[in-house]
Image 1 (cartoon, rainbow, N blue to C red):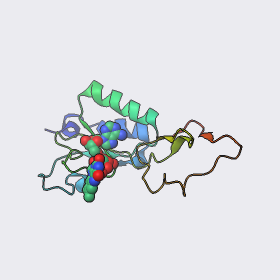
Image 2 (cartoon, protein in one colour; image 1 turned 60 degrees about the vertical axis):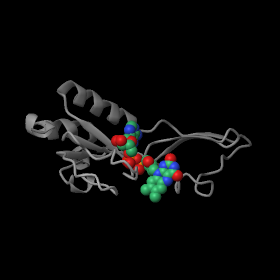
Image 3 (cartoon, rainbow, N blue to C red; image 1 turned 90 degrees about the vertical axis):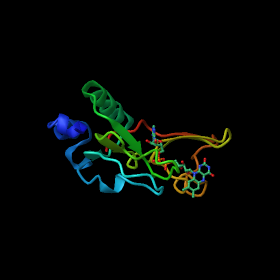
Length: 142
Ligand SMILES: Cc1cc2nc3c(=O)[nH]c(=O)nc-3n(C[C@H](O)[C@H](O)[C@H](O)COP(=O)(O)OP(=O)(O)OC[C@H]3O[C@@H](n4cnc5c(N)ncnc54)[C@H](O)[C@@H]3O)c2cc1C
């Protein structure tokens, strides 16, 4: 029995956190990856838009004993993002904001969906003042 079978109202609980448009039954492409590991199983994919939503998902899943599997690109080479216990895949690719950038310290704080391409020097904005430190406003749910 998977998490969703054990909790028929799970879809509604997920939708209350991430919004119904970000709860998806289309799990197929998350059940395998680039490795030869056997397919996993899952009931729902959710695509949160903020750290607060991720925290709420984790709290809800923990309280109800529902497995969560986070995934971004799914490019690890050990099958680590394949869901093994059913439950919910948490696709973090919507969270793609650069939160803080300090060029002098060569430091950047990013959300998990940021790619090398989107965070490269040519694609990150230069700060407007003489300061090389940039801080984005706190992210809000999309
Ligand atoms: C051709 C190739 C070359 C590579 N070369 C290198 C290399 O030179 N050096 C190197 O270090 N790696 C290398 N890798 C490995 C690969 O790049 C990394 O493992 C990959 O980038 C991990 O990022 P991902 O977004 O794909 O993670 P995923 O595969 O999506 O996830 C990896 C694991 O982390 C978990 N996870 C994902 N996001 C989060 C999160 N936000 N919070 C908590 N857990 C999370 C997942 O559940 C999973 O267990 C290579 C891979 C390939 C295919």
